[in-house]
Length: 90
Image 1 (cartoon, rainbow, N blue to C red):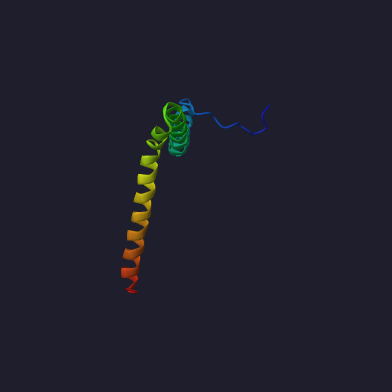
Image 2: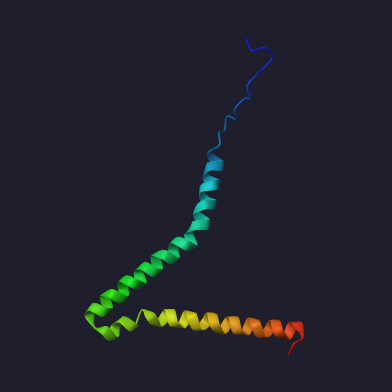
């Protein structure tokens, strides 16, 4: 006897679509960080291998890093100058 209580009926389709959606969102959030870590690991391995061949070759993997840092600094400086002009402090 249930005394007036009936458990809710489950959806026949199931919740696999929701599981796949949550999994896709989680991997979408983690992918940039994992890609960065794997890229950094490959950069370190390449530096070590090239350093073993010749010490001057170890500078080759550092060139893209230096270029990236230069680009970020230049972009930040340009954004700062644009903000100063927008606020009228120029």
